[in-house]
Amino acid sequence: MACEVWRGKLDAYLDGELAAAEARELAVHLRGCAECATDALERVQMKRAVAVAGKRYEPSAEFRARIAARVAAKPRRAVWNWKLVFVPVLAVLIAAVALNFYFGRERAQQRVYGELADLHVAALASATPVDVISTDRHTVKPWFQGKIPFTFNLPELQGTEFTLVGGRMTYLAQTPGAHLIYQYRKHEISVFIFQDRGEESGNLGSGKARAQSFNLESWTRDGLRYFVVGDVSTDQIQSLSKLLRDAA
Image (cartoon, rainbow, N blue to C red; front, top):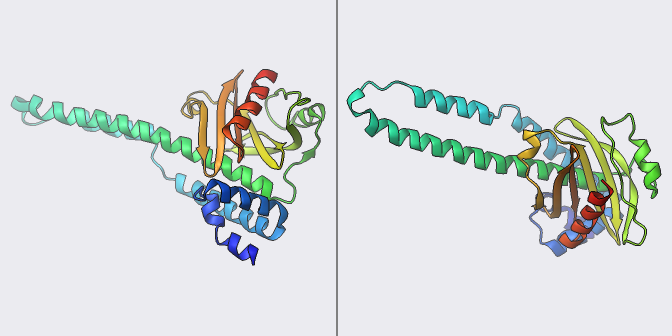
């Protein structure tokens, strides 16, 4: 009966529409129920497939800017009153491009954060959330050598409430990266590490954010982009993030 109740709330959970307390309860249920976890994983995979298909024909910001520039450069027949017509139109176009850039950046940011939240849920719902299982950072870090085109450092956790569970390969926008899973009491936290991709990564910004039902923090350092995602409080996210920064 409990499974039927929770399954009716899976879509809301994956879309970040459940209350925080209820989302935590469902996360605990998924860790203990293989059938519901499998259902959640299938829904996450469907969401990602739909998202990828939806981006296939999405016009880029550069394309919109070129169209706006062509419209703005189009000659006017009524030369005598070109200021009365051209200046307001140009102002509207500039405002439209600026708004499109701003909201396009916001959409891109939320899309990436949403995909990371899906990867977090998918890993925890999987029967094998990690490919290398170890609490020893000196075992987990070397496992990634030759699998990803960069290296990274992991923090010493002795004296903290965090435990390293293991790691696995992952992909974001077809870019390979490292997915590490840490445990804080009964909660799992995902740490994603990718190569920083210049302007594309810069559009994501840095700092704290929310993705679905999870807290998230992101930053760049030494050519790498870090993401920390979990259903713990922002204090715990920041604490683990500080450990990772110090190790880097």
